[in-house]
Length: 347
Image (tube, rainbow, N blue to C red; front, side, top):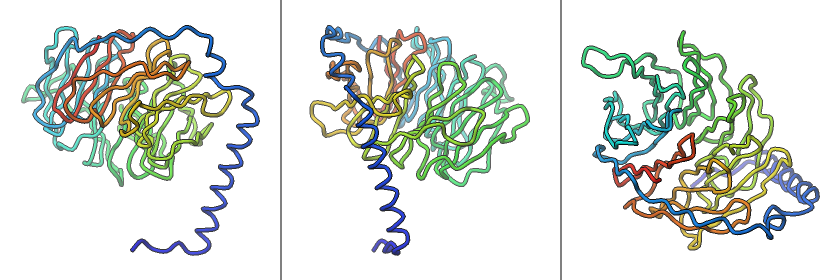
Protein backbone atom coordinates (compact mmCIF):
# COMPACT_ATOMS: atom_id res chain seq x y z
CA UNK A 1 0.00 0.00 0.00
CA UNK A 2 1.36 3.45 -0.85
CA UNK A 3 1.50 5.72 2.19
CA UNK A 4 -1.53 7.98 2.48
CA UNK A 5 -0.81 11.66 1.92
CA UNK A 6 -1.29 13.56 5.13
CA UNK A 7 -3.71 16.49 4.79
CA UNK A 8 -0.90 19.05 4.69
CA UNK A 9 0.87 17.35 1.75
CA UNK A 10 -2.45 16.88 -0.06
CA UNK A 11 -3.27 20.56 0.42
CA UNK A 12 0.16 21.61 -0.90
CA UNK A 13 -0.18 19.32 -3.92
CA UNK A 14 -3.59 20.81 -4.67
CA UNK A 15 -2.18 24.32 -4.30
CA UNK A 16 0.64 23.57 -6.77
CA UNK A 17 -1.70 21.97 -9.30
CA UNK A 18 -4.12 24.90 -9.01
CA UNK A 19 -1.24 27.31 -9.60
CA UNK A 20 -0.11 25.37 -12.69
CA UNK A 21 -3.68 25.40 -14.03
CA UNK A 22 -3.87 29.14 -13.38
CA UNK A 23 -0.57 29.71 -15.24
CA UNK A 24 -1.81 27.66 -18.17
CA UNK A 25 -5.03 29.67 -18.33
CA UNK A 26 -3.04 32.92 -18.28
CA UNK A 27 -0.83 31.55 -21.08
CA UNK A 28 -3.90 30.66 -23.14
CA UNK A 29 -5.15 34.23 -22.74
CA UNK A 30 -1.81 35.55 -23.98
CA UNK A 31 -1.75 33.18 -26.97
CA UNK A 32 -3.81 35.00 -29.60
CA UNK A 33 -3.09 32.40 -32.28
CA UNK A 34 -1.36 29.04 -32.69
CA UNK A 35 1.79 28.20 -34.59
CA UNK A 36 -0.11 25.70 -36.75
CA UNK A 37 -2.79 28.29 -37.64
CA UNK A 38 -0.15 30.83 -38.61
CA UNK A 39 1.69 28.28 -40.76
CA UNK A 40 -1.41 26.83 -42.42
CA UNK A 41 -0.66 28.56 -45.73
CA UNK A 42 2.98 27.41 -45.72
CA UNK A 43 3.89 24.82 -48.32
CA UNK A 44 4.19 21.32 -46.88
CA UNK A 45 7.71 20.39 -45.83
CA UNK A 46 9.27 17.94 -48.31
CA UNK A 47 9.26 14.29 -47.28
CA UNK A 48 12.46 13.45 -45.43
CA UNK A 49 14.20 10.87 -47.59
CA UNK A 50 17.12 9.55 -45.63
CA UNK A 51 18.26 5.99 -45.18
CA UNK A 52 20.82 4.04 -43.19
CA UNK A 53 24.15 4.87 -44.83
CA UNK A 54 26.32 3.22 -42.20
CA UNK A 55 25.35 0.27 -40.04
CA UNK A 56 27.75 0.23 -37.10
CA UNK A 57 28.27 -3.19 -35.56
CA UNK A 58 30.48 -3.78 -32.55
CA UNK A 59 28.43 -3.70 -29.38
CA UNK A 60 27.20 -7.00 -27.96
CA UNK A 61 24.49 -5.66 -25.67
CA UNK A 62 21.91 -2.86 -25.57
CA UNK A 63 23.31 0.49 -26.73
CA UNK A 64 21.98 3.22 -24.46
CA UNK A 65 23.40 6.51 -25.67
CA UNK A 66 25.02 8.19 -28.67
CA UNK A 67 26.54 11.67 -29.05
CA UNK A 68 28.37 13.44 -31.88
CA UNK A 69 31.66 15.33 -31.64
CA UNK A 70 31.82 18.89 -32.95
CA UNK A 71 33.39 17.71 -36.23
CA UNK A 72 30.12 15.97 -37.28
CA UNK A 73 32.23 12.95 -38.19
CA UNK A 74 33.03 11.10 -34.97
CA UNK A 75 30.48 9.87 -32.47
CA UNK A 76 30.62 7.95 -29.20
CA UNK A 77 28.23 5.20 -28.13
CA UNK A 78 27.86 3.59 -24.71
CA UNK A 79 26.48 0.10 -24.21
CA UNK A 80 25.58 -2.33 -21.43
CA UNK A 81 28.38 -4.55 -22.77
CA UNK A 82 30.67 -2.27 -20.73
CA UNK A 83 32.27 -0.51 -23.70
CA UNK A 84 32.37 2.96 -25.15
CA UNK A 85 33.09 2.94 -28.87
CA UNK A 86 34.36 5.96 -30.77
CA UNK A 87 33.22 5.66 -34.40
CA UNK A 88 34.26 7.34 -37.61
CA UNK A 89 30.75 7.65 -39.05
CA UNK A 90 32.03 8.43 -42.55
CA UNK A 91 33.87 5.12 -42.93
CA UNK A 92 31.93 3.09 -40.35
CA UNK A 93 35.19 2.11 -38.64
CA UNK A 94 35.85 1.96 -34.92
CA UNK A 95 38.48 4.50 -33.87
CA UNK A 96 38.74 3.38 -30.25
CA UNK A 97 37.06 0.90 -27.94
CA UNK A 98 37.17 1.97 -24.30
CA UNK A 99 36.45 -0.67 -21.63
CA UNK A 100 34.42 0.72 -18.72
CA UNK A 101 34.73 -0.15 -15.05
CA UNK A 102 30.96 -0.34 -14.81
CA UNK A 103 28.79 -1.70 -17.62
CA UNK A 104 25.68 0.18 -16.47
CA UNK A 105 26.19 3.19 -18.70
CA UNK A 106 23.19 5.49 -19.25
CA UNK A 107 24.65 8.61 -20.79
CA UNK A 108 27.61 9.53 -22.97
CA UNK A 109 28.94 12.92 -24.05
CA UNK A 110 31.54 13.98 -26.60
CA UNK A 111 33.36 17.28 -26.10
CA UNK A 112 32.95 19.61 -29.10
CA UNK A 113 36.73 19.68 -29.51
CA UNK A 114 36.82 15.90 -29.96
CA UNK A 115 39.46 15.58 -27.21
CA UNK A 116 37.34 14.06 -24.45
CA UNK A 117 34.37 11.78 -23.88
CA UNK A 118 32.42 11.30 -20.67
CA UNK A 119 29.99 8.66 -19.48
CA UNK A 120 28.11 7.56 -16.41
CA UNK A 121 25.15 5.59 -15.19
CA UNK A 122 24.28 3.25 -12.37
CA UNK A 123 27.82 3.55 -10.96
CA UNK A 124 26.74 6.97 -9.59
CA UNK A 125 29.67 8.79 -11.12
CA UNK A 126 30.81 10.57 -14.25
CA UNK A 127 34.03 9.31 -15.83
CA UNK A 128 35.96 11.47 -18.28
CA UNK A 129 38.39 9.96 -20.81
CA UNK A 130 41.15 11.72 -22.74
CA UNK A 131 41.05 10.34 -26.30
CA UNK A 132 44.54 11.65 -27.13
CA UNK A 133 46.33 9.83 -24.30
CA UNK A 134 46.56 6.11 -23.60
CA UNK A 135 47.16 4.22 -20.38
CA UNK A 136 49.50 1.23 -19.99
CA UNK A 137 46.90 -1.10 -21.57
CA UNK A 138 46.60 1.19 -24.60
CA UNK A 139 43.11 2.42 -23.69
CA UNK A 140 42.03 6.04 -23.51
CA UNK A 141 43.23 7.47 -20.24
CA UNK A 142 40.75 8.24 -17.45
CA UNK A 143 41.39 11.87 -16.54
CA UNK A 144 38.63 12.29 -13.96
CA UNK A 145 36.22 10.17 -11.97
CA UNK A 146 33.63 12.58 -10.62
CA UNK A 147 32.00 11.12 -7.53
CA UNK A 148 29.61 12.28 -4.86
CA UNK A 149 26.25 11.51 -6.47
CA UNK A 150 23.51 9.95 -4.40
CA UNK A 151 21.74 8.72 -7.51
CA UNK A 152 22.62 7.36 -10.93
CA UNK A 153 24.09 9.66 -13.56
CA UNK A 154 21.42 10.16 -16.21
CA UNK A 155 22.89 12.90 -18.40
CA UNK A 156 26.09 14.81 -19.01
CA UNK A 157 27.24 17.50 -21.46
CA UNK A 158 30.56 19.30 -21.89
CA UNK A 159 30.60 23.09 -21.69
CA UNK A 160 34.18 23.02 -22.97
CA UNK A 161 37.24 20.82 -22.48
CA UNK A 162 37.52 21.77 -18.82
CA UNK A 163 33.89 21.98 -17.66
CA UNK A 164 31.03 19.50 -17.67
CA UNK A 165 27.39 19.66 -16.55
CA UNK A 166 25.74 16.53 -15.16
CA UNK A 167 22.17 15.63 -14.21
CA UNK A 168 21.42 12.72 -11.92
CA UNK A 169 18.83 10.58 -10.19
CA UNK A 170 19.31 12.51 -6.94
CA UNK A 171 17.42 15.44 -8.58
CA UNK A 172 20.59 17.51 -8.84
CA UNK A 173 22.56 19.35 -11.48
CA UNK A 174 26.30 19.68 -10.94
CA UNK A 175 28.86 21.74 -12.82
CA UNK A 176 32.42 20.40 -12.57
CA UNK A 177 35.79 21.98 -13.21
CA UNK A 178 37.67 19.08 -14.79
CA UNK A 179 41.12 20.58 -14.30
CA UNK A 180 40.83 20.36 -10.53
CA UNK A 181 38.12 17.68 -10.40
CA UNK A 182 35.87 19.79 -8.16
CA UNK A 183 32.22 20.83 -8.34
CA UNK A 184 31.83 24.53 -9.03
CA UNK A 185 28.12 24.30 -8.34
CA UNK A 186 25.57 21.75 -7.19
CA UNK A 187 21.86 22.36 -6.71
CA UNK A 188 18.47 20.67 -6.60
CA UNK A 189 17.04 21.18 -10.07
CA UNK A 190 13.84 19.16 -10.32
CA UNK A 191 11.39 17.17 -8.25
CA UNK A 192 12.42 13.99 -10.12
CA UNK A 193 15.43 12.49 -11.91
CA UNK A 194 17.11 14.95 -14.28
CA UNK A 195 16.98 12.82 -17.42
CA UNK A 196 18.22 15.02 -20.24
CA UNK A 197 20.38 18.10 -20.79
CA UNK A 198 20.72 20.10 -24.00
CA UNK A 199 23.18 22.98 -24.44
CA UNK A 200 22.25 26.16 -26.30
CA UNK A 201 24.15 26.89 -29.53
CA UNK A 202 26.21 29.57 -27.70
CA UNK A 203 26.76 27.34 -24.61
CA UNK A 204 25.56 30.09 -22.25
CA UNK A 205 22.29 28.40 -21.33
CA UNK A 206 20.91 24.88 -21.24
CA UNK A 207 17.58 23.10 -20.98
CA UNK A 208 16.80 20.13 -18.74
CA UNK A 209 14.00 17.56 -18.90
CA UNK A 210 12.89 15.52 -15.92
CA UNK A 211 10.75 12.69 -14.60
CA UNK A 212 8.77 15.42 -12.78
CA UNK A 213 7.18 16.16 -16.22
CA UNK A 214 8.66 19.65 -16.45
CA UNK A 215 11.47 21.24 -18.44
CA UNK A 216 13.60 24.14 -17.23
CA UNK A 217 15.83 26.76 -18.81
CA UNK A 218 19.06 27.55 -16.94
CA UNK A 219 21.86 30.06 -17.22
CA UNK A 220 25.25 28.35 -16.91
CA UNK A 221 26.31 30.88 -14.25
CA UNK A 222 23.19 30.60 -12.07
CA UNK A 223 21.65 27.99 -9.80
CA UNK A 224 18.02 28.99 -10.25
CA UNK A 225 16.00 28.29 -13.39
CA UNK A 226 15.11 31.20 -15.66
CA UNK A 227 11.92 29.51 -16.87
CA UNK A 228 9.91 26.36 -16.13
CA UNK A 229 7.73 24.69 -18.75
CA UNK A 230 4.70 22.49 -18.02
CA UNK A 231 2.51 20.47 -20.33
CA UNK A 232 3.80 16.93 -20.52
CA UNK A 233 1.76 14.31 -18.72
CA UNK A 234 4.61 11.84 -18.11
CA UNK A 235 8.43 11.74 -17.90
CA UNK A 236 10.22 14.11 -20.25
CA UNK A 237 12.84 11.71 -21.63
CA UNK A 238 14.67 14.07 -23.93
CA UNK A 239 15.16 17.77 -24.63
CA UNK A 240 16.80 19.31 -27.67
CA UNK A 241 17.70 23.00 -27.94
CA UNK A 242 16.35 24.69 -31.08
CA UNK A 243 19.18 25.81 -33.44
CA UNK A 244 17.74 29.35 -33.36
CA UNK A 245 18.31 29.52 -29.61
CA UNK A 246 14.70 30.64 -29.05
CA UNK A 247 13.16 27.38 -27.90
CA UNK A 248 13.50 23.64 -27.58
CA UNK A 249 11.83 20.36 -28.49
CA UNK A 250 10.94 17.49 -26.17
CA UNK A 251 10.15 13.80 -26.42
CA UNK A 252 8.15 12.21 -23.63
CA UNK A 253 6.82 9.00 -22.18
CA UNK A 254 3.31 10.47 -22.67
CA UNK A 255 3.53 9.53 -26.40
CA UNK A 256 3.94 13.12 -27.58
CA UNK A 257 6.69 15.40 -28.78
CA UNK A 258 6.39 19.13 -28.14
CA UNK A 259 7.92 22.44 -29.07
CA UNK A 260 8.37 25.14 -26.42
CA UNK A 261 9.18 28.79 -27.00
CA UNK A 262 11.17 30.94 -24.55
CA UNK A 263 9.77 34.29 -25.68
CA UNK A 264 6.12 33.36 -25.27
CA UNK A 265 7.05 31.27 -22.20
CA UNK A 266 4.90 28.34 -23.28
CA UNK A 267 4.32 25.31 -25.47
CA UNK A 268 3.68 26.17 -29.13
CA UNK A 269 3.77 22.78 -30.84
CA UNK A 270 2.26 19.37 -30.04
CA UNK A 271 3.14 16.30 -32.14
CA UNK A 272 1.69 12.80 -32.00
CA UNK A 273 2.57 9.62 -33.90
CA UNK A 274 -0.13 8.09 -36.14
CA UNK A 275 -0.59 5.04 -33.91
CA UNK A 276 -0.26 6.80 -30.51
CA UNK A 277 0.89 3.67 -28.72
CA UNK A 278 4.56 4.41 -28.22
CA UNK A 279 6.50 6.67 -25.89
CA UNK A 280 9.48 8.71 -27.05
CA UNK A 281 12.91 8.09 -25.64
CA UNK A 282 14.88 10.79 -27.45
CA UNK A 283 14.46 13.79 -29.73
CA UNK A 284 16.49 15.92 -32.14
CA UNK A 285 15.86 18.89 -34.42
CA UNK A 286 17.08 19.42 -37.96
CA UNK A 287 19.58 22.23 -38.47
CA UNK A 288 16.86 24.52 -39.87
CA UNK A 289 14.49 23.58 -37.06
CA UNK A 290 11.84 22.65 -39.65
CA UNK A 291 11.84 18.96 -38.66
CA UNK A 292 11.58 17.36 -35.27
CA UNK A 293 12.73 13.74 -35.01
CA UNK A 294 11.95 11.40 -32.13
CA UNK A 295 13.26 7.93 -31.34
CA UNK A 296 10.51 5.71 -30.03
CA UNK A 297 10.02 2.46 -28.17
CA UNK A 298 8.11 1.19 -31.25
CA UNK A 299 11.58 0.75 -32.89
CA UNK A 300 11.06 3.68 -35.29
CA UNK A 301 12.18 7.27 -35.56
CA UNK A 302 9.21 9.57 -36.14
CA UNK A 303 9.52 12.83 -38.06
CA UNK A 304 7.20 15.86 -38.03
CA UNK A 305 7.07 19.22 -39.72
CA UNK A 306 7.51 21.53 -36.70
CA UNK A 307 5.67 24.42 -38.36
CA UNK A 308 2.52 22.61 -39.46
CA UNK A 309 2.44 19.72 -37.01
CA UNK A 310 2.13 17.12 -39.76
CA UNK A 311 3.68 13.66 -39.34
CA UNK A 312 6.30 13.51 -42.08
CA UNK A 313 7.18 9.82 -41.94
CA UNK A 314 9.20 7.26 -40.02
CA UNK A 315 12.69 5.85 -40.27
CA UNK A 316 12.52 2.13 -39.67
CA UNK A 317 15.25 -0.46 -39.47
CA UNK A 318 16.01 -0.91 -35.79
CA UNK A 319 14.67 -4.14 -34.32
CA UNK A 320 14.15 -2.99 -30.76
CA UNK A 321 13.41 0.24 -28.90
CA UNK A 322 15.50 3.23 -29.89
CA UNK A 323 17.31 4.61 -26.86
CA UNK A 324 19.04 7.69 -28.22
CA UNK A 325 19.34 9.79 -31.37
CA UNK A 326 21.75 12.62 -32.09
CA UNK A 327 21.84 15.09 -34.98
CA UNK A 328 25.30 15.84 -36.37
CA UNK A 329 26.18 19.49 -35.60
CA UNK A 330 26.33 20.28 -39.34
CA UNK A 331 22.83 18.82 -39.80
CA UNK A 332 23.96 16.35 -42.45
CA UNK A 333 23.43 13.07 -40.60
CA UNK A 334 21.51 11.50 -37.74
CA UNK A 335 22.93 8.80 -35.45
CA UNK A 336 20.60 6.40 -33.66
CA UNK A 337 21.22 3.52 -31.26
CA UNK A 338 18.97 0.85 -29.92
CA UNK A 339 18.44 -2.13 -27.67
CA UNK A 340 19.02 -4.21 -30.83
CA UNK A 341 22.78 -3.63 -30.16
CA UNK A 342 23.25 -1.63 -33.36
CA UNK A 343 24.06 1.95 -34.25
CA UNK A 344 22.80 3.48 -37.49
CA UNK A 345 23.92 6.60 -39.33
CA UNK A 346 21.09 8.06 -41.42
CA UNK A 347 21.95 10.39 -44.31
